[in-house]
Image 1: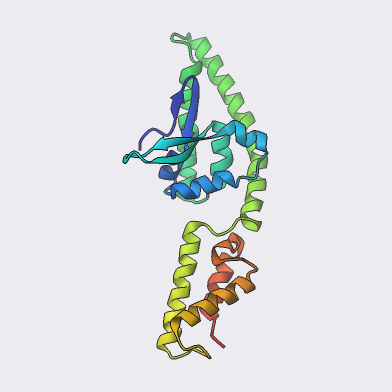
Image 2 (image 1 turned 90 degrees about the vertical axis):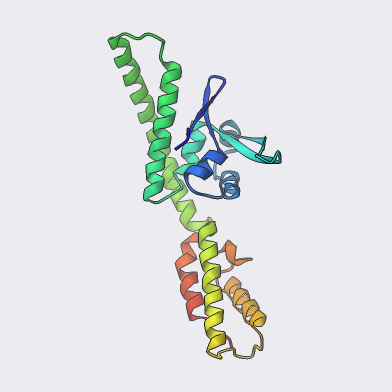
Length: 219
């Protein structure tokens, strides 16, 4: 895997493009996650810097430069076995790069031991600070955040599958066309889950939304 972090001056950074690549996410989804983080304005300004960049076709887009604490705040909301593995890789990459910056060109064995102990203490402090953030973010994910891109795609797929099944079985209620069925199911789903659009359904309600679609019948 390519480098996860890089040096800008004497500072170790990563960026939203690298995060998107590492966690196999769309870059626009990562940008949205960063902009919607539930942190103070000061923390956001200090840890995320939005800049322009040019793609391979010389087109201008936006991305975020991300400091270590900002990365920790962002990716601790990403779950799954692979995500845990990549988090460890990111932590190691930052540790390795920061250790190279801090380490003198020549260190005695005693100095190396002292430096390692200091780094361990600093890392331990960061972990304690982040644990509170993780708990708070987990609650936000369950109670407030809307569907991930993959969940929205899955829900939309279930809607299409349900409409095709009903249409093929001749169960159309008072509706005469497929577009009318689609309009009805999306309209009723928005009301059922109190959301302006199906993508705005809460993540915690994703399983219920899938079941609701599977049981939906036109009147």
